[in-house]
Image (cartoon, rainbow, N blue to C red; front, side):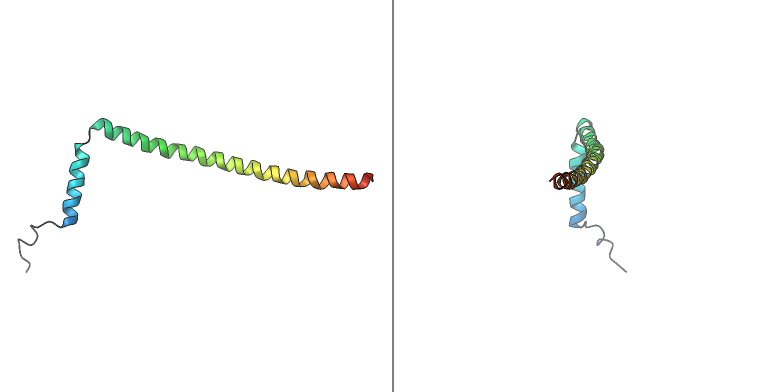
Length: 82
């Protein structure tokens, strides 16, 4: 039992969405393509960067373990020679 003219008025959210859609439609295809390529490039490089950081972290850990054992063994050798 609702009124017919009640559905004719648009909500402010719907009007805002319609404005955004019109603004996006005004962009040229080259701008939209450039934006899409930029987003894809950013997504692809983040995987390489993450893999590089993991390798650096593993190398740092191995270097710390090596330094720990090197320092412990070198001090034991110096104590034995005295």
